[in-house]
Length: 267
Ligand SMILES: NC(=O)c1ccc[n+]([C@@H]2O[C@H](COP(=O)([O-])OP(=O)(O)OC[C@H]3O[C@@H](n4cnc5c(N)ncnc54)[C@H](OP(=O)(O)O)[C@@H]3O)[C@@H](O)[C@H]2O)c1
Image 1 (cartoon, rainbow, N blue to C red):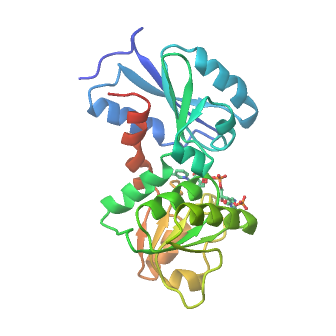
Image 2 (cartoon, helix red, strand yellow; image 1 turned 180 degrees about the horizontal axis):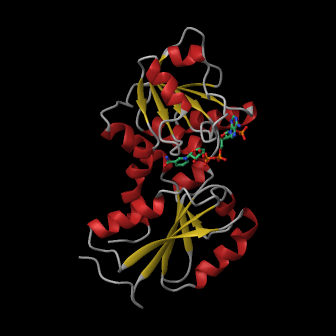
Image 3 (cartoon, rainbow, N blue to C red; image 1 turned 60 degrees about the vertical axis):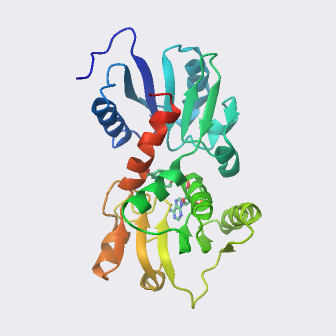
């Protein structure tokens, strides 16, 4: 059984804006309860706007019973400059989605979006090794996923993005770290894809356009999402109606929840 919140409780947080639909607090506290650690730790939502992040990060250094926080939109890039230490992954990706407070108050950040995404795919029985991948987006989640796909041995990766220069920049960074992988930023018209991944927010709003053309969806075997709300996005609904395999954004979060708790020092 979990213990009540006491003066000994260590605080974890989710820092995000918007936050009301966030699933992290529910999932993290359920996992803590499962491990009989709810009360020793609790994860609280902290609704912090982009303008507020600097004083909030400074204050977290002073809170001695603060263990760490999951960091979500819109802070994942901005927080890189505000904390004291980054893991290699966070440096490569240029974004952070979880921070830990060390006993001396130093804040260390890493990014687990990519590992979470791949863990979710693998646990659903999909294969990444030798896969031909198509990725929409070049922001924080997309960058982390691109590195994780490369690290897990995908054969090729095509990165498309609204701002083409960002796709080019991400493609160059991946190519430098993984020279043997075939990387592009324009889908070859004759190419089929094993996995097409939406790592943009398209699908969160009811009137959003699809992140991939109908032709690209036709040429893909599995359509995977980062968007978590709604769970079945218009992309997944459309792909499923065409008989494609679909994979929601939920396993990506579930896949990294354990990794996040570990990083924040939950034993
Ligand atoms: N399931 C999970 O566990 C999980 C984890 C992390 C993120 N996510 C979701 O993944 C999505 C991306 O998050 P992020 O942190 O990577 O955000 P981000 O760093 O702000 O990047 C957003 C990316 O999407 C593109 N984009 C934004 N609005 C667009 C539009 N209207 N049309 C076309 N492209 C657009 C941006 O293109 P530009 O470069 O042109 O701006 C950029 O490449 C969000 O929906 C987030 O909720 C889910």
